[in-house]
Length: 101
Image (cartoon, rainbow, N blue to C red; front, top):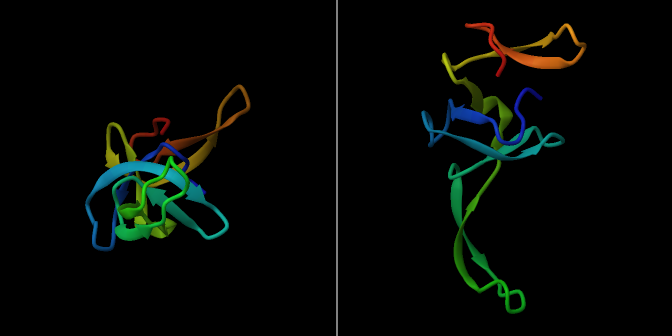
């Protein structure tokens, strides 16, 4: 997967199209990501001891990986390719500017 936790992404389809936010969690087996403040739904939550209160909470639900696009700091939303540095580690690079994402 080209998207990792903490990456800045843009939503390219769905009800939140055009919004930019950070990736909170990646679910590689399902091919989905959880993005902060995107695809939220109200859920009823049960009280769990003294730490968690009962009530209706907003919860971020996962969206499919194909509906997000990485955002380059210089170019905006871009496709990425993997490259190999001279020291031997893999990195993701922007297709437009060639810089590391």
